[in-house]
Image 1 (spheres, rainbow, N blue to C red):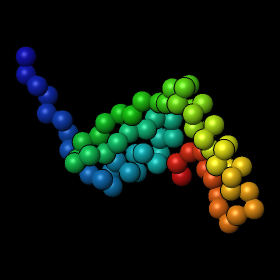
Image 2 (cartoon, one colour; image 1 turned 180 degrees about the vertical axis):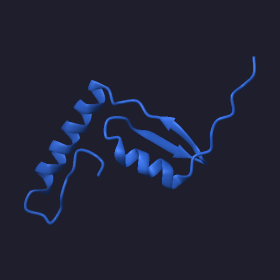
Image 3 (cartoon, rainbow, N blue to C red; image 1 turned 90 degrees about the vertical axis):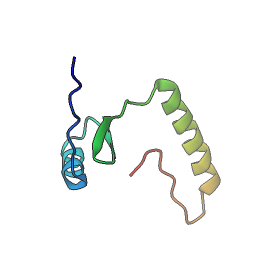
Length: 70
């Protein structure tokens, strides 16, 4: 059995593909692309709880709280 060589992808090609595909996410590292899994329900619950608490604490201040990456 032979190993298939992994194709080298340029950063610009990866970025164009990442922007075009809004459903799947991947990570680019040294010319190789790795699929990223989605977050679990427990992870999302933690994110919402932390963001909610931060938003409460930031009311009246010149700050914005976001629950997801932008």
